[in-house]
Length: 305
Image 1: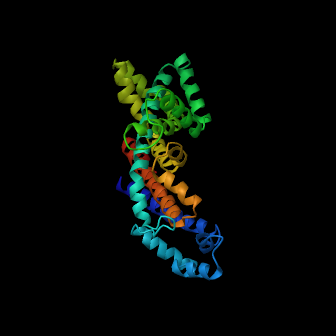
Image 2: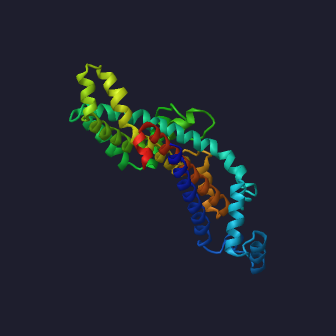
Image 3: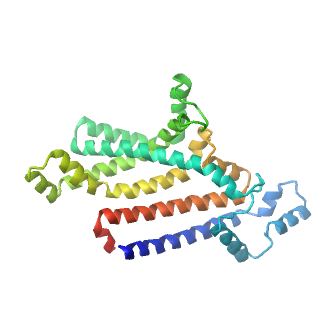
């Protein structure tokens, strides 16, 4: 088991290093950063002074190593626009994005797993067809359109929840539903297919032949093996939710990392963009690593890979 964890950790560290190189390189290739910071009205002398002040006159390798060493120490420099430490901005906005992502994942799991199990047990029935219809609709519907629909119905018409803001827990309900519904179809289909495969296995037929109760066969024996791939997918989906919350946070005016990233991109605030991209990527890598370890705990056969 420890060899498996060590191997997966090395892979995660190599991916993190690759992401850091790409994150730094893409912004360097986007154009003259000093000119972007100075703006179209800056003179040549001002642009050159900006280049010196921000270390943009140094060799690229030196710029990268300095930035990477600072990132390891959680020091991403100062924001060009907000004129404050980038990490302070991230720490201020991160709880909103984490709360939104966790709530959205909880909603997605709470809907997809029971629905996938029931659809597998009632294969070919109207419940199965309804579940597949939900899956198709969820993947075809843009989440920003769904979010706006939720605002119109539940915030404007019914006035059950606020249309924007994160001052109370009610402000997270609609955005969490909008973000979670997008991840529900994939997990529901995976749960359904996993249950269908497991229910045909020999050990399930043996358990039924021994006279075990149906609930024990389904939840103790079948579901435990069927949800193994769902665990890995849930970690991936949480990473997507954290990184893809830009649209939802903008629609619902949530002061999270997504909205901060959008503002930074529109204002050429490159230190903030680099920090958010790297932090979200690290979250994604850590979640994937934890999912691999949890899968290995649930299924010992994976440890040999």
